[in-house]
Image (cartoon, rainbow, N blue to C red; front, side):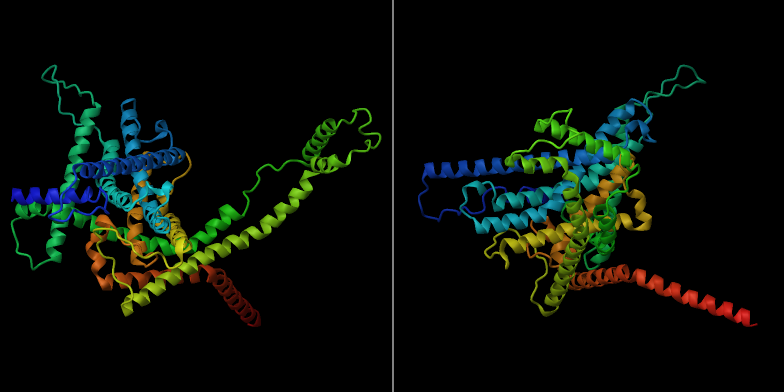
Length: 533
């Protein structure tokens, strides 16, 4: 039993660090002599490539971490204003939880940009294979990024975020009682370590519950497997079945959440953009006309001083003739607002239709891609997402770099629409953050939400046929991706839900006006009947 457990754990850990060396080196043929210098240079090149790609991964993580920290600091309230903040001891607790949330949000941002980076990187590598400035970008780096994102997203979802939440909620384990007398007890001091112990114990209990539930679900899904006692099946399936199965269920839950939030967000994003981007914010205190006139006179005074006009003759007589070279400068200095006002009017008039047309084009292309993928699945022109051990791409995108950029824009658009749709759902809108007013527990909830949606984004894009880029690492080994009915049904539901949400969005004003007119006609008829009686 223990040997099976150890072998399973080693197998699971080996998948994390697989393909870290170069994938293009070939083993020497048997019977050929190996040059020691050549072997040394090959190993040295592999070592430098290994170090370089991990340095790049570290730099990318640091950049994402700084961006995530700035985002959280923008939304989070001061710790002193938090309801659970009780003293100086909570300062360290909140600081540690903040660091964990920042790391989790950085992993979520990495999961969002993982597939776009891979698509563009693959296309660039095939277009410019011998470019000197792209030597740092290779298939091994892309594969390592997929492995890192998969492992760190699991750790953030099942370890870091639960620990951060329970760490804030913990009160400490009061296990050091001191008794001064038989009738009085003094409460011990609750230090940081006691809260760490309590949080660790709660997290262990949560992990045991999740693993047991995974084992039960696995047994229900596979009744043909010989039943073994619970401790034996639990420990032997720990690494090979339970942990991947838990993430498989979580990825399925994330894709189902995207199935609900993405169509709602696609319909809602038109209103959000129209309210926050197109229309200028209302001016609370518009400036008075006298203030504008005084500012205009001040600008004219400064302009006249720069042109060398005397103060005494500035108002009473016309200025002396100005050289030809400075006339354009004089007019632009004295009257800058009229020209700018015309540009602003023109920009305001064309900004709304341009943005609406861009959103409509992105939505149409997304629905068209899903529809084409559904038809291809039915007639066998599109295969199900399969597990890819090695990434070997021999054909470029049909439309080249332009097609890859379109896929990237569609993927990011769906992610943005999913976030908008999530915060538009009534019973989930409570989690919507407010600037400098979001509590730490709400920050943890938002980080978990973004992490779940972003982790399922590569699976969603591949399932809907938005991209043909294969899922690498452990993403392609999810159990439910090989179910044809589930994948095809997901495509059909996504297309139908998106179309219905769009139809409901654009026909809602017409329907409201129609029902209002009908109710008005009914009330008018009743009034006429009452008058006739």
